[in-house]
Image (cartoon, rainbow, N blue to C red; front, side, top):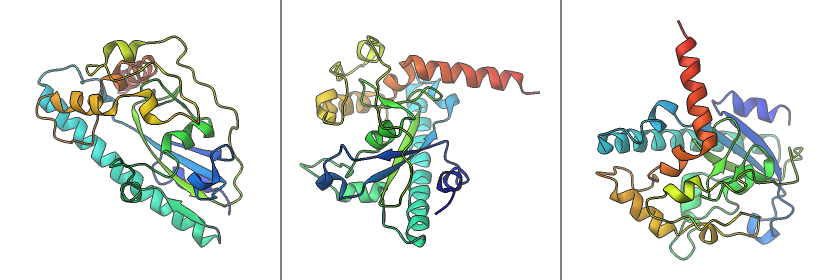
Length: 240
């Protein structure tokens, strides 16, 4: 199997990372030793309009972007798994439909969360808001992942969080849902955030059209996301 990363990037992914999942219990990862994290950045012109009226229009645009990117990630995930299987190895595409089938206590959960795979691959870290944060895009991105036994070379084995003492997402969360806890591979999502409070805050935004899309405030407020938005604005300004 050659150039799997290059292949995935040709499918319009913005970031690809390989993770060694050895520290995840085997029963949780289905004995798959490796994970491939795949990300697509969200449209910066939509993210930067989060505070612009009318709120209903923003939520409509954001909901459509969220759905469009998720659909494309599912396609990339499936194609990646098919490519690996064609090379003679096993692979599970953790698409939205696959994750929905893994319901536990009424909640959807991947075998290994996409964010965990991405964090262990080294192209980002999990912030206090439970979102994957990257240096290039902040948290303005969506993720998917593939679990595999293919002999890929992991990008990184040591995890570090770059949030430090920052509390901007906590201070500005309308649902007061973020608990100011640092993530580790042993941390459950519910340890970091009150998901019900997060969902309620999202649905309180006027005419939210996509019940699965978060309100996006912690995405936009993140300093790393702000750098991405400003950089995109500078690039647009330089174009003739």
